[in-house]
Image 1 (cartoon, rainbow, N blue to C red):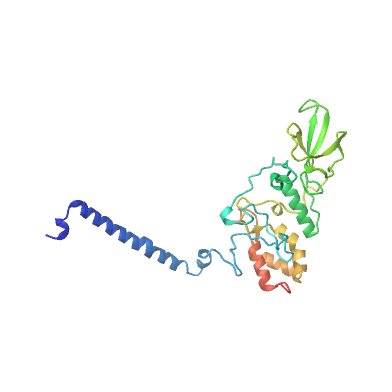
Image 2: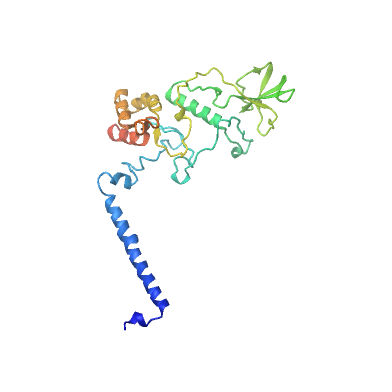
Length: 295
């Protein structure tokens, strides 16, 4: 009679359980991870398994900011689309801005309390479009935006509440002492907005203005992606930046466009989505092939 047969049944159950734990630990905790690591080194799988890293650091799957120490765009780099992930492209804080098309009225900061304000989606779009236009030397105007880069939105008070004659008009996104984008509206002088004032009884009235229906600055240049991590921009935004890059790098625009084409992906399965340019890979290629002199 062997030793196990003389042991109580509960001891035998525990010994069997321990054996199972040891076997599973060796198979799933050691052999399986080692096998998967070995398979991941196979050519064709190695790049994805290592996070799609690129020379110089980072991943081609996650966007990066190409700004100087003051937060200004570096002229020799293609600029990505905006990011709402943390301070920008923070994979641990991937998120959208959660602002919709009806986000048109700013919360104006109170003097001495800079964190008390909050920009509407409209003002974010307007300010970004103005900044991109200035950087690329094109018209950055957009419908429903003022010349100073905020939402062109009026708060109209009427004597009948929601109807009737206008009695007071305020430019809701232009804080005093800013000059309102319109002098008058329906015969009433337009006022600048006072931070902290209550305009909740006013009818919110966006004004389209005379900006072109198809702005020079593409939509992806002024709106963030849902994840805040996308490394791609549209070919139109890449083309807009081409003259600046060519000048800063001492290249011809034709040479820059060839690089853009190399890092442009087509539609998924030929029908899904839109063509896109990977800015991270493109900028890395620029540094390899045409580094900035003196940098």
